[in-house]
Length: 397
Ligand SMILES: Cc1cc2nc3c(=O)[nH]c(=O)nc-3n(C[C@H](O)[C@H](O)[C@H](O)COP(=O)(O)OP(=O)(O)OC[C@H]3O[C@@H](n4cnc5c(N)ncnc54)[C@H](O)[C@@H]3O)c2cc1C
Image: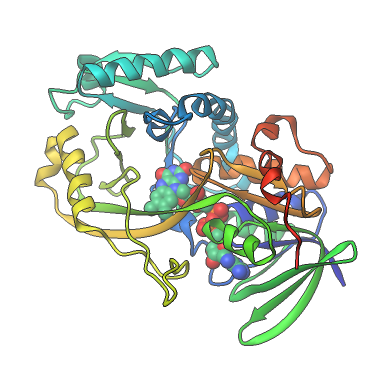
């Protein structure tokens, strides 16, 4: 039997793509090496970053231009998130009450006002606030915060439940979802793809017309085993959470000049992150171990918490109850890579940074590209075809 679509990976992207394909009448099969939501989709900060993120504003790169490209996508992602609970028919802890990106000096303010002007040009209604206006929204902000960019629809959601909600909906619509099922090998046989799969100690094969690599930070290595170059690079990160406190922060907090994301959960815990690095474990050959959780870097933990408490001094009275690490990946130009790989017809990828924010939208677009056999215009800019040159000298095994 040849599957119409075989999906590799049961994170947010894979489960959401399975649902969109199944509700369109296809019968996708999804295989997941571990459990649903076991990768970055279940470990992330849950921030819905719709303002241009700080990483696009860092000096020295083409980030500013890329930040503009991402705004178009973020506007669509706002609509996608706003409709998700209705579409999936269950509560998903989505809080889109607004987000503040803070400035604490003149240089931050200058960057923030350039950013807001750029976003407004592109139709994203961010507003520049004074420090006092920001403190009207969050009275506990430190007195030296001198400005903020405000976006009314920014926010956060609960990463522990979303992928499972998509997986349940996909199953209910006819998708097959198999956990403890690892792709070992994938190769082209005639017009189809043949996958070798290890399922609870048994080796089986399956063929499929289309394959989606929704394999997060494993995607580049899986592709490399097939002789394909997909420019995705590891980003091992860390997160922390404090004990509970009475609700005072309904917004997402970011910082334009420092790595920071902060939010308060429904239970009152403060979740703190913002792109601080952890350190991958190494295999005997020195390559990063993609399956092992990265090590926490104590200096980075200290620095992250210092930035957080600098912005919200009340955090000094809280206790840290847990820190954890997780691995994700970013692409060579920081933008998502989505769609069919030109050198491998029928093979699709969907990976890159901030795929919690963009995942529901891009999974739907990816499913459309398979159903309609064409890349939707909305995501043409993010097509895998922009890196086709990297596979110009590739001979697939
Ligand atoms: C600490 C941290 C904080 C983050 N914070 C945010 C944030 O606040 N906002 C945001 O937008 N993004 C954030 N991200 C990024 C975001 O989490 C990821 O971009 C997103 O979850 C990727 O989803 P995915 O489905 O592509 O990958 P994953 O969730 O990693 O899923 C990939 C799945 O593929 C499976 N797999 C791999 N290889 C195989 C194989 N050979 N066979 C079968 N299955 C396989 C894995 O087991 C895994 O379950 C963060 C990431 C981390 C690590």
